[in-house]
Length: 162
Image 1 (spheres, rainbow, N blue to C red):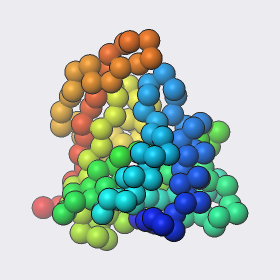
Image 2 (cartoon, rainbow, N blue to C red):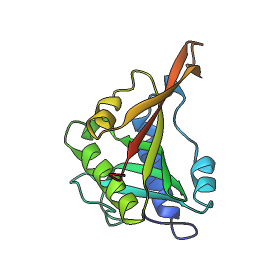
Image 3 (cartoon, rainbow, N blue to C red):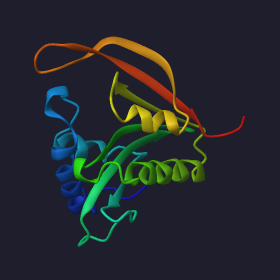
Image 4 (tube, rainbow, N blue to C red):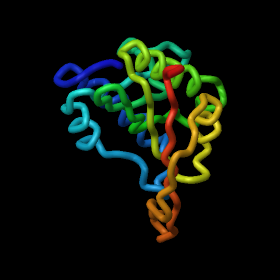
């Protein structure tokens, strides 16, 4: 994964630009700048960017289409945030980004990856396609702006054959 403060200020701007447009406001899933920057102060937290043409960790002058934010502890890693701008969805960028995140985790000896998402999140198809399986449900965990309660699905992916 890339970056850690203090070098990643410009990348935080890039993450926030994607965050603003990629997460539907009615679900309250987007983080604010402070949450992102504070998370990057923690050991084991990193991120990966993908450009609009599919380049990983694009140069600063290249536009950013998506990002992943992860946190690792020991031999496990959690996918905290994963987003691709709506304009660039359906072009394989999410799959390329997730492939890179998983490959980087494996190269660091990560054995299991976790994520949590709201039920019926369209990204669920991507995660399932990569082998993530649901290991738990948190009933009514998320609340929409209108007050509707949505379940959270906890998922894992085994990165080793053992």
